[in-house]
Structure formats: structure tokens, C-alpha cells
Image 1 (cartoon, rainbow, N blue to C red):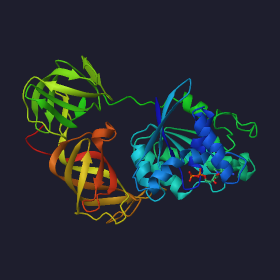
Image 2 (tube, rainbow, N blue to C red):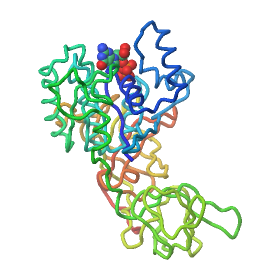
Image 3 (cartoon, protein in one colour):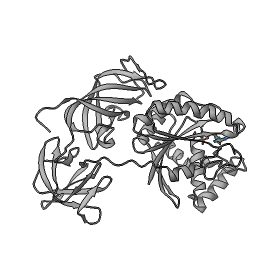
Length: 415
Ligand code: GDP
């Protein structure tokens, strides 16, 4: 299974490329193809308008249904894929960051006529910050620059340098004409100077799966207590594995127990590992609630209430220090204040710049203070227990995502 997102500026061709990719992978059903032919004709063109394939999302958005990221599943004979479609022009950065936190690869689109734009740099930087180490650079609209190899090279070369400077380990670039399918499903005959694989071939063969975190962690989503004989703690394992009989510790309280039973969706399991949704039963009655973390007793998560963290700000109003927000980390929701903005980051050079506030789409580094301690991990070690969002209390809008870096001060008398 490969999970990826597509990033790019408005009109670079993301919808067209994704529609064409699904078409070339043979994933459009007959009725979808009929609708595509019919609706493309309505718009007055003989050619298929592949952007229409993903248009359902736009309709939903117009009806006011908020979609952060719509995940689409498709497959070929060689691999299963989940692609995050990040809709919304205004909220694009927010949706992209949400998507990037859940995937291991990004397809970054560039319009060949425009080359690398400030948005290309920002999206690439956010991908890197959110842990993506592999990027496919799709230089689209090559037909509009005469299918010219020099134009392609003038974009790809600086992009390699840019991505490397941001810590992206690997970039595969390719020239594309999305609506015509050049280098989408099949290799293009029209650009013989490019000898590499098509986008679909790259997606099928790249080694981009990242090993899950090693240490057992289960953020408790809810306490399942249908009657007095059963008490289980339900959630999705976000690291390591756990077996019946294992000693565990509940965090942040530090209470210890052994796993008595692991209930899966349809039957009891002898063990469970990262990615599985399970219900754990313990060998003694403990006081556990949503937001707690059940961890391996021999190597629990650190617990703290003050952190240094990276922040990507997407609130309309700027981030001002000391305002109170809700912070969601794993399944925990706590009150939080950003006590200091240390600097913001120039995404073109990665240089720190002096700042007292963060504006829309800016990235910065600051200190955050919670009103109670939580179990956490560094984002680099565990995205679920190291990645958080900030929610504005009045508007209920998600105004930032953040990556925990380290604890400033360990809370005393707890693990
Ligand atoms: P998005 O906003 O990134 O999703 O972009 P769309 O997929 O909606 O494409 C924007 C416009 O560019 C549409 O009119 C597409 O038909 C057109 N387009 C997309 N890719 C290409 C391409 O490779 N060549 C040409 N000539 N037009 C393209």
C-alpha cells in the first residue's frame, strides 16, 4: 500500500492529472466514463476533461460540507494506492498539511510555463517538515512549452537542490502532459529525450513505505463499558505491538497493569500491531479516559506540559502569543497557549527570521504550554503522538498544525 498526496498551485493541473491517472490505471467504471464523455462534450470539447473525475468533491464543497482531505483508493496489478485529494483553494495549505501528515510520498506539480513558484517552495517545505522524504516532481503542461527538454531541465535542476536542502532524500522528476496522458500511465513518445518511467510506473515501483514507530503506543479513543463485566479501552495502535500478558503503563497517570485480552473487530487476538484498531482489556480496574495513552511498561512515552515545536499557521487572524487554543494530540484535547514565537522560517532559504506573530501560511518555531501534562513523542519518531492541531475556541476552526520537537520541562512526579 502506497499513500501519497498531490501538491501544487491553483491550475497547475492536479485534478486533471489525478483524473488521468485513475483513467490510465483502469479505475474508472463504465458509468463514470459515460458521464465523463457526456460532461466533457457539454463543455464544448472533443477531448475528455479529466478534471471532471474529481469534481464530485467541488459539488460537496459548494454545499458547505467541509472536507479536509478526500482519500481515494485505487489499485493496479502491482500495488494498492491511497491518494489524498486536498481540495480547496483558500484552505489549500491547511488541507495539504493535513494530508502530508498521513503519507510517505508527495507528487509536486509545477506548470512548465511558470517554473518554481513561491508556493512550490512552501508546499515542498511543509511536506519535508511533516516527514515526507520522497517526492515526485511532475513538470506538467509540457505541451505549452513546446515539449522542450531545456525548459524541463531549468526547472528540475534547481528543484533537486531545493528539496535536498530541506532534507528530502529522493526526488524523481518527469515531464507530463496530463490531459493527453504523456508519461502519466504510459511513457510519452513525444518526449524521447526523457528516458525514465511514467508516473504510474514510478508509483508502482518506488520504495516509499516507512516502517511504523517501534514502541507500543495506544491512544485511548473511548472507554467501552457495556456492562459491569466488561471494560475495554478502544483505539488504534500507533506504534509497536502488544500481546496478551504484556505489562503496560497508562499515561500520563503512570498506573501499571497487564493486558488480559485484545478484542479485534470480529474476534479476540493474541497480539496487535501499529495500524490495527483494537480494544484492550487489562487485568485490573484503572481510572482511564479518552486521551490517555497505553504504552509498553518497559519503554513508556515521555510526559510533559511544555514543548518546543514547529507550527504551520493557517488561521485568518495571525497567531498571537498567549491566546488560549484547544490542542488536539493523538486522542487528547487540552487547553494550550503559545507562550513564545522564537522565529518564523523563510521557506525559500530556511533561514530563521525574527517574528512576534505568525500570519496565514507562515511556518515558525515556538514554545507551547499546556494546562495539563500529556504523553507525547517527537514528531520525527511518531506522527500520531508528535503531531497536533490547534483549534480556535470561538470559530471552532483548525488554525495550525504543529510538530512536537522536545519537552522544555518534564512534568514532575509522573513518568
Ligand atoms: P488544478 O487547479 O491544479 O486542479 O488544475 P486543473 O486540473 O483544474 O487544470 C487547470 C487547467 O489547466 C484546466 O483547464 C486543464 O484542462 C488545464 N491543463 C491541465 N494540465 C494541462 C496540460 O498538461 N496541458 C495543457 N495544455 N493544459 C492543461
